[in-house]
Image (cartoon, rainbow, N blue to C red):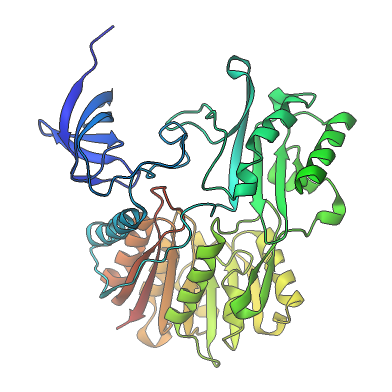
Amino acid sequence: MSEPILHTLEIESLDLEGQGIAHHEGKVIFVDGGLPGERVLARVTRRKPSYDKARVERVIRASAQRTTPPCPHFGVCGGCAMQHLEPNAQLAIKQRALEDALEHLGKVRPRQILPALQGPNWGYRHRARLSVRLVPKKGGVLVGFRERASSYVADIHQCLVLPPHVSALLMPLRTLIEGLSRPDRIPQIEVAVGDEATVFSLRHLEPLTDADIDRLRAFGTRHNVVWWLQPKGPETAHPLDPAQEDALAYALPAYGLRMHYRPADFTQVNPHINQALIARALTLLDVQPQDRVADLFCGLGNFSLPLATRARAVVGIEGSRTLVARAHEDAARQGLADKTSFTELNLFEVDADWLRGLGHFDRMLIDPPREGALAVAQALATLAPEERPRRVVYVSCNPATLARDAGVLCNVGGWVLRAAGAVNMFPHTAHVESIAVFEPQ
């Protein structure tokens, strides 16, 4: 067995995965567990032609921002990457990551840096996918997140980023699954926590027996959990009790709204930040009562319906037929059907002629997935000055694609990036959410 390769390294910065960045003899080394400003002894775990990967063995000089991770599973569980860094420092690094992406990838700088949005550091994660694995060598069924950089399920007993009542069910879930007829054929449980209900969606690769159903019902009654079952793809998901189909909802009290959704629908993971993000987006858009507003990648209407309480008309466009239907239903339920319209369309394949065909918009909100909104940005860049919305707010979950699209808008289309700022949707992870404001010159 070869001797381990150990280096003493100076950590210079963090990457978007929360790894320290160092150099040794001209080669980049990504150091798991290292923080900027630290000197560490690190063990090389992987060697590549252009870079190495390493893990901290010992901290020789610690950063003043290093903190003791409160979770006993940190370092093994892959759910969090930054618990060893003080929360305010995490946010500062995410803000810097956003600025660096805009400058280096998009070749653009915001005229104003917005204060970062932050909320609770713990118990914030109201959506999660828990992996399930029968591992006899580890005593039975494991329920949790995957290990860091591994396909194995971590042997965790609690999770501090999940709501406490969900964390407390990790061990009871193990016992439940072990008692089912085919525990080896249960790959995952999706968690969705609403204001008044907690839903667990059980993915099962074999039919459940009557005894299995009885066990699930008893568990749901004992722990106040609503069960959904998913035998195949997401479209097969259904409630164990049909009367509980509409159990999930979250309130947006600032707008007098209550958003209804199903466990498989996309909703924001962090409800506290979601409310703050909606408020900031509407403030930045500066919507007026006479405005006609577009909400692109509108989902189930998370921004559309709040916008409809302020604007004359809102046009929501979304690629998922299911979410479009959900938005229609909620708009009608909440008395906003006359001010909203929702359409299913692939927004990755649009152009300026399509955008012109929708008629003039005074404001526009864009909230794409990680792939970004390149086609929309190219369409906006092509519009004549008089055709352009007076303001565009772009909500992003990927600073790289935001930077790319910002480069198209500003460097090709002549738009101005008025402001941008980070949003800490996922504390203790390296995930960077952000918001940006564009205006035509």
